[in-house]
Amino acid sequence: MSGIYTGLLLGLGVLSCLVVVAVCRRMKIVDPEGHPIHLALGMMRYMPWFLWAVIKANIDVVRRILHPRLPMAPRVIRVEASQKTHLGQVIYANSITLTPGTVAVETDEGTIDVHALTRESAEEVRSGDMDRRVTDMEGER
Amino acid sequence: MEALLYYASWACLLLGAGFCFVGGLGLLRLPDFYSRMHGGGVTDTLGAGLILLGLMFQSGLSLATIKLVMIGLFLLLASPVATHAIARAARHSGFAPQGTGEE
Image 1 (cartoon, rainbow over the protein chains, first blue to last red):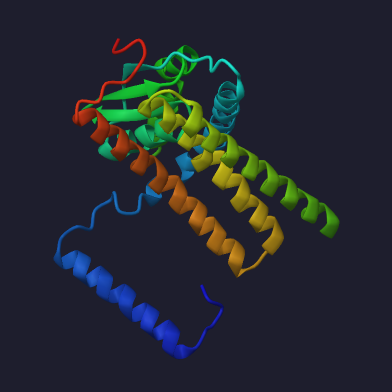
Image 2 (cartoon, chains in turn green, cyan):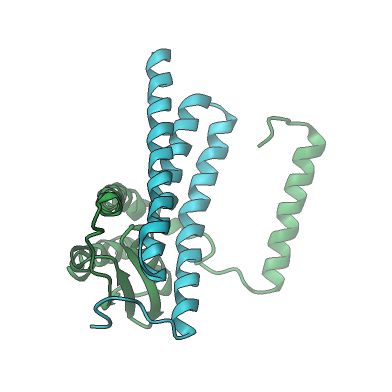
């Protein structure tokens, strides 16, 4: 990534990649979760919706922070994570955390505890819209 | 075209800086630990994202832009994991969130 393409540098890069792959194989930690390329198609459909949700949530949180009376009602709710694999649940939990106003505090098998800043953001998570979309993306095999 | 990119870049940089500022303000103004995390969330997502986008407009189609995209992807993966780890640690040490409580 430095813009320098000499044989030595490229050769060393290839060599270190091969060594890392060999070490990982020996340690038996190569699995489909390492680089989930099979989700690429679903990701492309999910990302635009997700980015828009993040922007909307950002504007809402910013409005509340700048409001002189700080209107909010923090709460913890438990929601379902209907994804089949651990990877899908991690994507869902991370999506919740990336959306300002909601943070995934605790994850368990099939459920996520979410700390929400306001009643509206809690309802948004509880509606299960994001959950459904992540599950759809995961189903794209 | 060049002027357009230039202004778009500055608009993104200034907006990003604004979001980072409000995020920091949120860290100071919000009442308890858990709600302060949401202030940090603003800085992590739109603040950092818009600044990266503005820098991409500056560098155009070049190697620097690819690096910026990599930084963006890394932030997208790392920042929620870090936030979640902090929140989880706080909860496991028995730190109760302020507000209406568990439902």
